Image 1 (tube, rainbow, N blue to C red):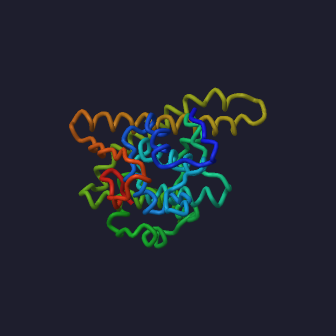
Image 2: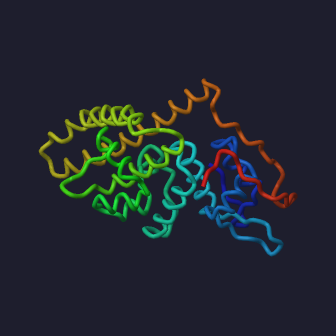
Image 3: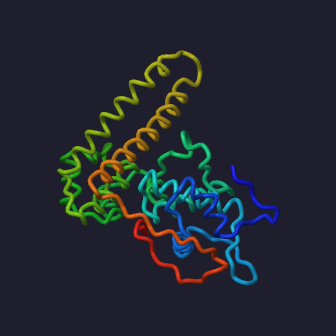
Length: 260
C-alpha cells in the first residue's frame, strides 16, 4: 500500500504512480477530464497546481473501478457520488471490492422514484407508449397492481438509451433470460441459509444474495470485455501523459473511453 507523503497531499504525477498498477491506462489528461466533468475537485496550490488528499485519491479509485468493472457512464457515477455524499461524509468505500464496494446502486432519481404509474414511468423515462408495450410484451417490465416498481425506471431508461443504437425490445429477451438464470442460481445457493431456523436467517440470505449478485455482475462484465477484445472491439487505450502537472499545462482533452 502506498503511503501518503509527509506534506499531506499528492501531486498529479504521484497520484498516477499510486494508481497505475491498478489502472494502467490512467493519465494526466484523464484526471483533468474527470475534474472538468465535476467528478473530482482537488485543492489548488497558490501557483494553481492540483493537490490531491487521501480522500481525493480514493474517490478517483472508485470512479475508475466503477468505469472499468461496471461500464457505467460518468453521469451515473456522478449521481452515485452525490448520493453517497448525502448519506455519509466519506466517499464510497472501494476497499472491499468483493462485497459492498461492488454493490449495484441505481441512479439517485430512480431510487427516489418509488412506485410509478404508467403515465409517470413514461414521463420519467422519456419513452413512448409503443416501447413500453413492447417491454411488457417481452417480460422486461411488469406492473404490480397499477404501479411499476422503482427498478422499472432503470430498465426503461436503459431500453430507451439502447434504442438509439437500433436495439429493439425483442432483442433484449436474451438479457432477461440470462438475468433469470443467474437469479435462479443465486436463489439455489442461498436456499440452505433460508432453511435455517435461527434469527436473522432471511437477512443473512439477502446479504449473501447481494454479494453473489455483485460477483456475477463482475464476471459478466469481464466476460463481455474479453469477448469484445477477442473480436478486436476493445476500446483503444489512451496514450499516457507521463509529464507532471507542474511541468506541463497542456489543455485537457476528452478521453475516448469516458462518456458523460
